[in-house]
Length: 206
Image (tube, rainbow, N blue to C red):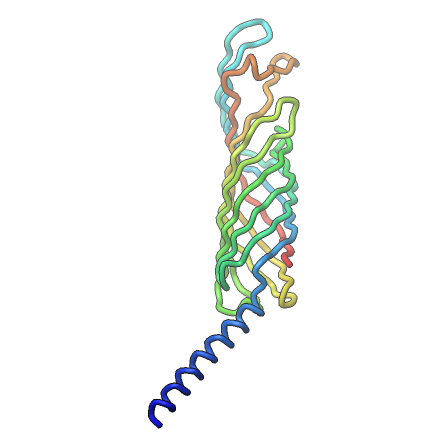
């Protein structure tokens, strides 16, 4: 009799755990997708150039400056919920980089959600690392890094609206213009720029 009671208790506990896991999985869609858009304010830029001028002279320039450069950004994203607290997602989109050039960034973002209820409103934090291609006459690769936080509003079980803010760094390669002429990459040893910016935006996730 005692063995039967113990077996029934163990079965009940196991059944509760399985039922709870099923409930959690129903509450948490694994695959996510959506769109993000926002405003980017670049407040510092540093340029380093080394090239041959149109007259054949070797030129070297380095300068940094504070100022506000305003741009827009839009991204599409697809991700995977590891659990109630973590999501890993791939982001790709279109952005402007001051008056240097536009770009197509691609990045991986890890997002941490605070609070144990995915259907409730809650705070979030994220880190985003990636690369991309500059849109110019001779495209080159760029690198990006973002660190941000925000607040998620749960519109429904599957639909979430995020308000986010971030600080970001972008390393890119501007086109060099010398006396009105474009210096091609064949005549360029270095054309680097580091941009520091802050951004605010919204993201709709399904």
